[in-house]
Length: 141
Image (cartoon, rainbow, N blue to C red; front, side, top):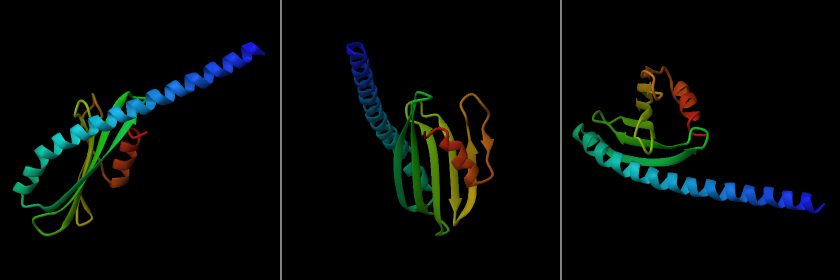
């Protein structure tokens, strides 16, 4: 009975340790994603302005994928393009290596660009937002 109680306590403490480690890893990923976001936006925004895009708004979210041991950042941008159409971009990037995994662009609701780039494989053009979302979902677990 004492052995069972000790074993149960060890499992409880072990799961608490794993949970604390996971929260720490999530916090580190969130901090790394913020650094990546600032760096990417510092480089991207002047380029967007050069092409007369206005009303640029950007947000990001971090995703810690424990299965792949990777930290991802999903950046979403909306803006008004030079033809005064509302446009959007979404990209999924490794927050540490800065490898771009997927990129989506639309203008006025019409897809312009959809590409996916799994690491170690050739870039593939995707045909729809659904295909983009299905690909990125694997990384945002």
